[in-house]
Amino acid sequence: MQHKKIAFIGAGNMAFAIISGLINSGYPTHLMSANNKSNAERREQLRQMGLQVNFTNRQAVEQADVVILAVKPQMMADVCAEFTDVDFSDKWVISVAAGISVSRLEQLLPSAKNIIRSMPNTPSLIGEGMSGLFAKKSVNQTGCQFAEQLLSAVGKYYWVETESQLNQIIAITGSSPAYFFKFMESMQKSAIAMGFSEDDSRRLIQSVALGAAKMVVENPDINLATLRENVTSKGGTTAQALAIFEQYDLDKIVDQAMNAAIKRAEEMEKLL
Image (cartoon, rainbow, N blue to C red):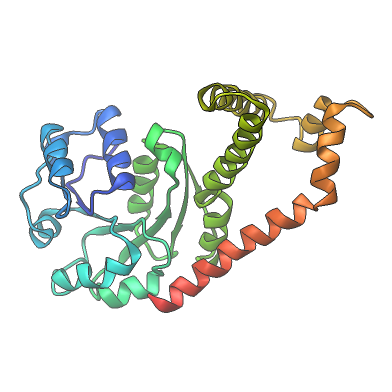
């Protein structure tokens, strides 16, 4: 992997996941700076990991080759205002903020020529992330390769052809861990109602979720419908359970939920 000076502007969970992944992959810590103004404990944690944490945002950006914008979307304009007059022409900018388009980032950072948007998800925290990536055709390809290597440290990546597809990626991979957590939460509530303890029900359900996911991963030539059918005997218990999902049109519910996520992402782009 290329070794560049990286400035993390914002050091919340997603930035911390990327930092941890880079360190685990052998990236030199002295080339990374990060700060979290509101969290002294996180700053100390980063310092102990070997990162420079005493720079101001402006100082970090000025000395960096790569600037990773990892602040909350509603904070982006105020944060970028600190260094609008910094020359970004030779820097790579990677944003991990939802709802902030490339055109908006170009407004906030007028000299930036190489802007890449990324949509990581929370499994990045355990090295199992799936990140969507978008860059204009004019973006330096070496920068794109660096973004790939960066996100490979926390999982996998997927390039989209158009920026609007990033909103779809948010619905498919960004928000979707919460869909699975919600389903598992509902199963746990039902198990508890049957008399199982909270700990036992969670242990049972998370084991099944992990096993089912591994069956999908380890059988790439078997489609999802077939995997479902393989568990379902005609007239059996699984068929009865699935009939309830059909009755309440689970496919439609999921489709509506994913499109609601896309709609909100589009709204955020207009607001921010």
